[in-house]
Each structure stands twice: as structure tokens, then as C-alpha cells.
Length: 376
Image (tube, rainbow, N blue to C red; front, side, top):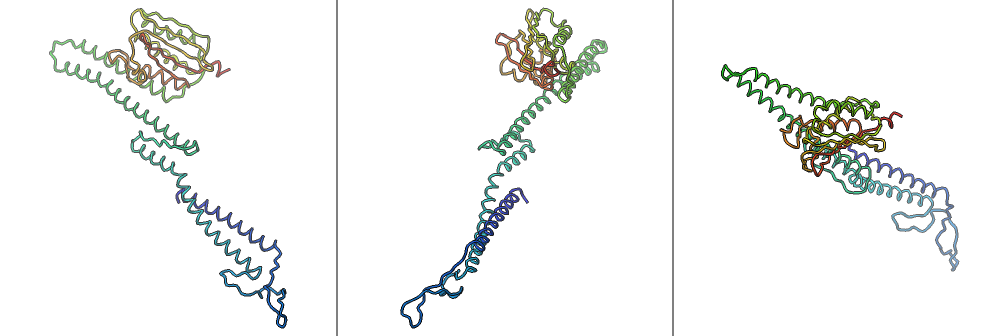
């Protein structure tokens, strides 16, 4: 049986039980509570010109033409019983009919959700239920399903872009490798094989770095980070020491609060390294990078602001997508730094946001939980 039929049957049985109890109560009341005193009709007495009223036993009244003649207490109870049974049948039919209509209307959102699920299963994720009405449980379920479909659609588009970008990212060096190998095979004997091998090794090293970065991205997305107190000042010092060779000609200023972060020290160091490297690499000679940290309730807000080329505002939301580069493929790097940083921040219960500076460069803000708040 469908849920609609089961609900209708439940409502009908409940209504029948209530109506039967009501009829039984009325019947018992009419049987035992009232005191019946049924009078006779007025009849003339033979030899007496004046009519008199006399009491007779039940059943001696003048016959009355009716479908339900009532001459005694038993006639009343029988009529009441027949009327109650008819009313019970009528109420049962009405209960079944109205129950079927009402449950059909109540369950309509479930049919809409099932239809949306079938469309989603067929790959159509752009359909939304968008149910109107008061915020009841069924509307909440429909709205939750719409949110799930929206996230699935975004994830699917992101996955497709990632697959396309990854294929393009890896195809270019592979095609270059193929061309160099063809040149080594078909070229003149006196060509510099060592130079070709050196170039091939450089391309292969880049491929290995790209694959390693993809593994890091996948690990950060799938692995639950461990939580332990991480000193912010010590973490920033390690990152700045590591990226010092890339900071030549660029002014770096730091303003930090003395606080601890809650998270995996390796992943947090990777996050901060990626952000600082991005700020240094996409800069210009004589530019600047400013790193500040401030308390934000139970979290720490880190900001990395750099100078550099103007970034169009419409490209900012795509900067955290894998392999995307605002200045094209010639900008250097793998295009995975900000994507990995955003994934690590999400895994720690934080968030990463990017805004374009009007004069050039970016301001990257990452919010992370405080260790002294979590572990105290």
C-alpha cells in the first residue's frame, strides 16, 4: 500500500471508531437514563358521550403510517440504532473521501521531491522544487533538497572544470615531451642530446610537482586534520624563513597578535606558505606584502595583502579553483596554491575569502579557530 492509502485508511478507521463510540454512548444513554412514559391517544368510551383519557399498555396506540413508527421504548431505541448506523456509514464514506484528498495534498511535496530526485539521478541538477507555502516540515524538506541540489550542481561544475583544467595542465608538458622525443629520434645525429635530456628532465620535474600538488589537494579535502595548539608567531617565522629567497626586492611587513591556532601544524604551515608565496610571486619589484593577524572572537583573522597587477573583480571567485590563474598560464606556478589553502581552511572549520585591491594585488583573509579558546 502507498503511504497515501495507508494514511487514508488510518484516518478512516479512526473516524469510524470515534463515530461508533459516539453512537454507542448515545444508545446506552437513551436506553438506561430516560424514564419512558408513553401516553395513549384520546378515545371515546361506549355509552359515554364525553371522551376520556385512559392509560393503556405499550403497543395499543393507534397505528401511524410511517417508515419508522414509534409506539414504545423499543421502537425509539431501534430507530436510534438504525439512524446511528446510517450516520456511521455516511461519516465513514466522507472520512475516506476527504482523507484521500487531504493526504494527496499533504503528500504532494513528496512526489515533487521524488521527481526532482529522479531528474537528479539522470544528471539534471538544475531543477528546483521551490515549494511555496508556510514553513512546515514538508517545505523544510523541500528547501533542504533544493539546497542539496544547488550544492551538487556547483560540485559537478567544479569537478568538470577541474577535470578539464587538469587534462589541459598535464597535456601541454606531455605534448612537449613527445615533440622533444620525436626530435631526438628524427633529428640530425650531431644534435645536443644532453640539452634535450635536460629540458625533458625539467618538464618531467614540473609534472611530478603538479601531481604531488594534486595529491596534497586530495589529502587536504579527504583527511580530517588533527587539532593541537600551534603558536602563530612561530608558524609565521617558519614560513617567512622558507620563502625568503622569493622575497628579494619586495618589502614584507608583519603585525601579529600573540595567540595560538587550533589545527594541524603541517597543514597550517602549508596554507600560510601558499598564501605568502602567492603574494610574492604575483607582485612587482619594489612592491610590498603585509601580513596581519587580529582576534575575531573564538577565531583568528589573518590577512595577507600584496601589491601587483590589477585583478578583475569578476575573476576573484575563480581564484580558488584548481589550475586557475588570473594572469594566464605564463604567470608561473601550478594554479593550485589558493585552492589548497581554501581546502585546508575549510577542513579546520575556517574560511578563506579574497578581494581585489583597487590599486592592484589581492587581500586574502583566512579565519581559523583559536587554540587558546579550544584547549583552555
